Length: 257
Length: 281
Image 1: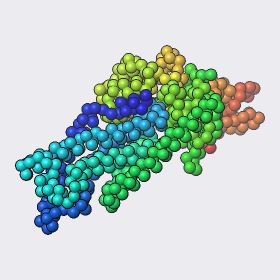
Image 2: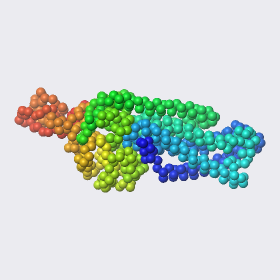
Image 3: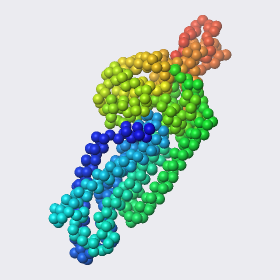
Image 4: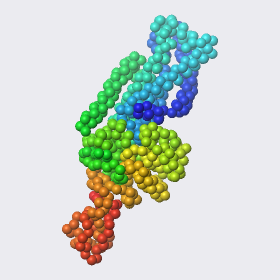
């Protein structure tokens, strides 16, 4: 009940919609730049070899500035709400258990919201530019798609879906990871009040975003997902233990009374 | 039993002992003064009771129920802090709705009536309020919260004399109407000495006393006169502290004044002067 109340009192529809609108505009600009960049890369590669290797396709589709931006955006989007929720929970005496849950839900909602904004907009822009450049609607330019078709059947599907799916997955993983780090850190740093909560949030944001970006930049997509997955499991166990310990401690003391 | 009970409450921050083995009972339906010097542990105590921080050891009970991470017990407590913890981008009237969500007995009409008395612009965002009006907004939330135990941490910070007077008046009215417990943590002891029924004095994290203010004051007096005479008179008495200006000495003595020799003047000790003597190094 208090989890829902915390979410209701911090999530403001008007604010969310205006932020989403601003985000959509940024995505449009970045999509255009990315599209132009990808087209240039594909043209260059095709001129040199006439076809694209699996590695080249991965490079083009996975490390997407829009994907990273969306992920970081989702994390950042949640920071403000996390700080607000933490602060409010102190004022209205909401227990840590409810606060942890509210932060998790908030992060997942912001990730979902950004996914729902970024990817349809990105797809729409790509389709529009494809139509403008090639006369046909396609997720990517005809040349890019043809090159992909020439490599392997696996990459034919991947070229369309890989960027989108991996982006969504990474973003959801990232947000969840952030939420868990955030709620754990906030519990450990529970002496903080007011401005301290914002500091803790920024710390969480930086650590989670730093880990994610470093992983994406230095590792392959699957290693990143594996590492993130493991981290998530560790965090989930830690979170579960934390909540359980608090509940047990509380129950025992109540029994004594 | 109704009330808040602290049992051997201790809070350490690494090497700092913010609160050390404090045991006391805050009775329901009284006005308390929580007094202590800067860094004495007042805010730590309030934050522990409000579940904002967890104790290193010890227990807190609200109406007989363990309060740590206990929603039902925590619903009975409202704390007005020095910092604003409500969303600052919300208008006062929106913040009222938020607090009401968590405190079902929150009196919305009373909150707006108070806002009018204090001339608080309810359409202004909390972040754009001045220091004084920010305190007023928090005071109104606390007074209207409908909670059984209301803590005020430095409630009159930034308030002008007129608003301070109005706050004390409203607090008494509210107390008379609701019978809730009010705990005021303040450095302005003289200003609220008449309001306080019981005083909790803490010093360096330890409880000095938790008694009726009348009792503290009844059992103490000030004796003033030439230093030699005062020293002679107080030689076999418990002296809490003393001040000497020129050759004139004032001693704060525990007990009742008896057989006062000529040349010495006896007066009632003020709560503030007793507090200063009790907490002086």
